[in-house]
Image (cartoon, rainbow, N blue to C red; front, side, top):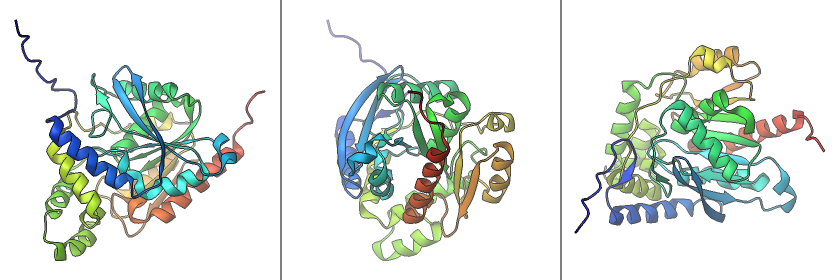
Length: 311
């Protein structure tokens, strides 16, 4: 007797079908190839599913002992989005990029994890499974909310956090969703129009063919099933004691940069907050060399002042 078909859970991200999934994987591989060469890939198990992890560098064996960098991508994307950053970061430190379960990528979600405590538990379990006791955690957009949430709820493994134009500081407004929709529509524009649209929208996806193909494939292939995260309250931000480096685009539509440049250091003593000009939501893509240098300089400063490990 045949078994009834299992209905897809409405609270767990999923691929539409295997064919579209494989097309998306191929598009991701093409974007990965724009960055540093991979050293290895692995899967680790958590309470919420399987997390796929990409490992980079460093080229210098002496740098293997340095505190590693862990990268958490934005919503609706995967670890391939870090291609402008993996080369510079992995030249000096070990780098791990995690595909977040619930977003398109090679991770497999089995349980919902959009709730703040569950999200922090997932990341803590993934780092534990990788054997990482102390990391510099970097997150973009939704990944920025994940790293801020981690700093608030489970800071024990964190040497520092660097949220890049992050969620988690303000409620996600209509202007951001409108920008996302218009940017996606612009990726289908005729070739001659794309550079002008990319400049107007400050959206590099439009003019990088590999990125454009990855975005198109992801929209067709995957269904994200989670609400937008609520921002951290002033009290929650004030609980953060981990060194924090906030980087925002001057024309960000996700948050108000000047407001957060004043607010975050006021609530988190010692926090750095800077605004990068000539960009909106993707400072680490639009100005990769600058942001890579700032991130590495911040991590070096943190490591220089960290207490020596106990023998």
